[in-house]
Length: 308
Image (cartoon, rainbow, N blue to C red; front, top):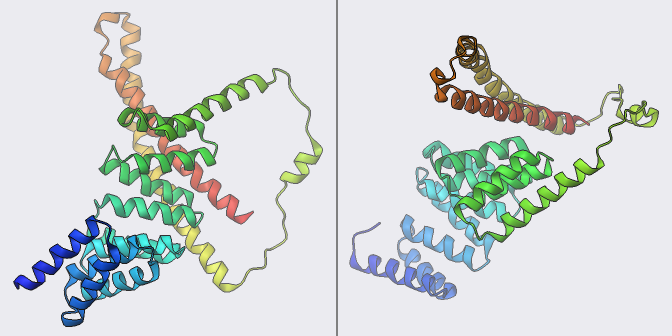
């Protein structure tokens, strides 16, 4: 930003107008100043934000794109561009912009959050889950990210993980009505499942079996669609490999060692000598393995669903 007093005054006045939600006046002021000095990134960012809050999303997009070209290392420019592109329904371009933001700041919580929105809209649920998890990891009390994560799990009928997400929201915000309502919905669903469970076996349903068979006829798709499918499969299999790679040492070393120590303590029969930390470690390891397994399984299900 230029050091002249006039430019600083324009920026302060524009922020004041925005705080009072006088966005048309802020836009006019910023446009006039940028006609004289179009290279001021701070003013260009304020202009894009004023357009966005006025509902003029196309103009906001153009302003943020201009800013990314002028200052490609400015993280906020890429984040804001991604948010506006999501608003316009240009989710693929939004995801590209948000990845650019994360290349510049791997801890940008808002970038992960907006990336989750883009990937969810593109039907890439596993990748959206990873994005929301990163947002929550860097900011545990980010309730909106936790809520969106829970909703994806709910859509995938993974009620246990959805319940955990909504419970985590209520820990930070006990009065969150949406989290409470969704949690109640899960609990009612679980009650219905328990009531409907039958203790009797059933014979094979021939119609259901026939419907479940996979067709052997080759699919006919164009080159662009095939390349898009390959790209999706590569990304999802990368998620599967990363999760399975983490599971191997946990199963071979961490879990095996903990169980062995507990077994030795059990054989000795001295309950007073048992280390409570071992049981806590076992519980933590089981939870980590379950999360890794679920993420890998969800990625496989997403590939299977896409191919169907």
